[in-house]
Image (cartoon, rainbow, N blue to C red; front, top):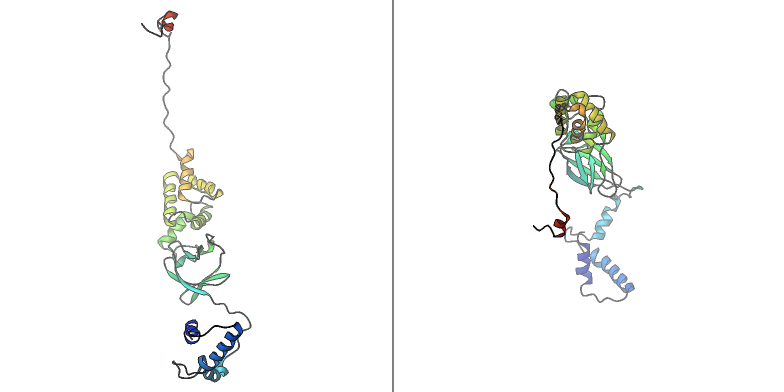
Amino acid sequence: MENRVKFIKRSFFYGYELGTLTTLNTDVGQWCAEVANGEPCAATGVPPQQRLADEVSALHPLPGVPVEVPIVEDRGVSKTGIIHWLGNTYSVPDRLQRLTVQVHGFEDRLEVFQGQERVAVLTRLQGKGRRDIREEHYGPRTGPGSKGDQLQQRFEAIGPCAADFLRGLARTRRGHLREQVEGILDLCEQHGTDVVHQAMTRAAAFGAFGYKSVKGIVRCDGRALPEAPATPTPALVTGACPEVAVEQRSLDYYAAGGER
């Protein structure tokens, strides 16, 4: 029955003279038996206690273990493979980018569904402002032979540290991932692959995964910069210095305050 509180308030408490708690419990018990459950229901035309007696044989005992009832909500996946749940950030498989998924929130985990398929199970973070970004969610951006796959292959060909650096870029998300990758590849064309690879290795050692970090290291590295043009040394002055006459004044001049 819907609106139980309103039903009891309007059908029992209105006009009731409140006495002791014992009297109240007795009176409300009698009202439930004779009125609430004893009179025919407007919806079914049958008293509720009679309907219960008819249906009791179809009722089953409750399970012996608690039943998990999740909070189910839709979430949009960002272009970087991210969803948000109760103030925390989670990564999902990157093939879900820009799609809408259904999240089932349990006490200890989040289950992510695309249609009827469960695509991810995430440990639910406690508190707010925390992040769970998983490397396994960031593989090749698209299928083999595609533009995204070719871009990844070009980047990983820079050197041994490139694959780890790419995963670091995916975790930190400093700007759009594709723009970061293309920027570093442009640095390779300008300064050479070896120089950029060394800069990436140094940046990764400090956890500075980003195009700007690599660019800054490359530009501070003298091997990556053109040699500065030789500046001619100014000619030295030779010969004796000319004598300069200095005006000689009496001390009386200073005592008079410099007046002429």
